[in-house]
Each structure stands twice: as structure tokens, then as C-alpha cells.
Amino acid sequence: MIPRLARIFDEPFADSSQIPTLLMAELARRDVTVTLSGDGGDEVFGGYQRYRWVPKLAHWLARIPAGSRAVVARALLRVPPSVWDGLVAPLPASVRPRIPSTKVAKLSRIATLDSPEAMYRRLAAHWDDPSALVIGGTDDEHDNGDAWDGDEIVHRMMALDTTTFLPDDILVKVDRTTMSVSLEGRIPFLDHRLIELVAALPESMKIRNGESKWLLRRVLERHVPDKLVSGPKSGFGVPLGEWLRGPLRPWADDLLSPAVLQRQGYLRAEPVTRMWDEHRSGRRDWEYHLWDVLMFQSWLEAWDVA
Image (cartoon, rainbow, N blue to C red; front, side, top):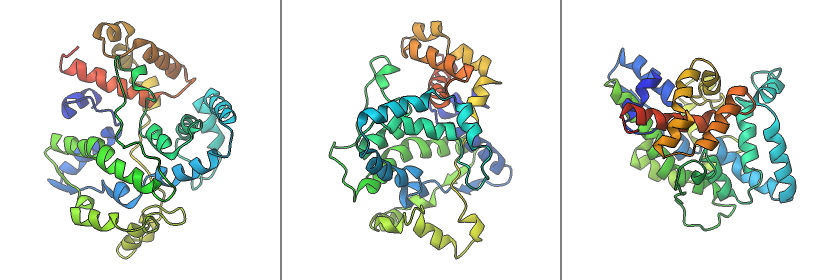
């Protein structure tokens, strides 16, 4: 499946949930020709974890001196991913965090930042500095630069996700995967009348007492069993890190060759080579950074652009 992705998407597309989404589309197409998708529910009703945690972290981290935060961030990154995963393994499944090493890495990336808007931007991207990877690369700012105050942090994040992440990633993923198997995917949460209604509601109707999608859950409770509503949010994560160290390693070795990267002249070989070495050895987990590069390289190869 993975070698097919470049031609299915027709562009460098590196959201790894593309893999289970394509599998699900192929499975559904065996029986139906039209499906309904729940995409848009997170952006409209406040489902992403960052909507709950960014305001809290910004408030908490502001009380800690910047120097101390930097020391802690560096210390967190020195611990191998396997150690973090092992520490939480004995915990009951009901309270055990999913992919703890990834969550620790995210915390270390934002620990030195001072504003919620900076934290959001850091969490919304894999590479902190585009120019560190892309030769001549720059960051495209989507906001007007105004400071976010405490009453609008969540709505600002939701608005940015709705106008960037949703159309440029989520909807592209659903459209390309379903169309590749002649399946139509429809997105009822993006009915403009529903969006206009929910956008006018206060934040407390979306996130209340730490519960995301509060209003949507109350509606669903009328129609489906509670166990389908109250369970923890679970994304379409796949064990990329393990695959890249195992069955995908030869494929990745070829695409991440320093000689190939230097000859192409698009990406800087040095950071890619360093991350690949650290990832293969298990010292760090760079699965998402490397997947970005691999999907770009796979696209170049598939379309003979290199």
C-alpha cells in the first residue's frame, strides 16, 4: 500500500493516518458506494486535546523561569522513547496515556515558549524551523500576529484549524483515499448551517469541565449507547516508528540516502541523516519528521521529478 500513496494523493502528503483511512475506504467499498465521515467534528465542536491543554499549559509555564523550562525540556529529550513507554506500561489501560513518548516530545517542544499562539503553531507543525529542512524554506504565518487573550484562545485555535488543517489535510486525505477506490465520502458536520450555529455558541458549550465536544456528546446520548459516547478520543495512529525500524527500513534507507538528497537539492541532507540515524538506533523517535521527508521523496520518485 505505501508505495501507492504518492500516486493516490498526487502531491507530497504526509499525514500518516492516510494509511488506515485508505484501508477503511477499501473495506467499506466492498459493500457500499457512499459513506458518511465524522471529519470536521473536532474543529467545529472542540475535540482536539490541544484545545484543552494549550490554555492550561500556557498559564502554568508562565510561572516558571525560561531558563528552568529549557533545562527540563532538554532533559526530557535525552530519555529514549522506550523508557517513557515502559514507565506507563504497568498502568491500567483506562488511565494509561497513548504513545507517551510522543506526548513527552510535544511537551518538550513547547516548554520554552511563552504564549499560547506560539504553542499552537509549534504543535500544529512537525518541523519547528522550515529552513532547517527545506533549502530556502520559510514559514507562512496564517494569523495577524495579535496576542491571544484568555477568553479567545480556544476559538482562535479552532478557527485556524478550520481554515488550514481541515481543508489542507483532513479533507484532502478523505477525498483522495475514498475516490481512489470509487467510494464517495460525505461530511455532514461541515454543513454550513451547522457550522454557523455552533460557531456562535460559547466555549462552555463545546468544552466543559475538561470534557471535549460537550454539546455533541449530549445529543448523541439520546441516540446511541453511552459506551460509544463517553470513551476516550482515539485517533488513526499507526506504529510508524516501529515500521521504519523494521519492515520499512530498506525502503526508507533508499529514499533517505544523503547522496540522493544532495543531488536533488530540495532538502538539507544533514538533519535528515542525523534523525534517521537516531531513529534507527532507538535513541529518539523522529517518525513524523521522517515521514514528512519520506512522502516527499516517494512523490518525487513516483512521478520521476527527481
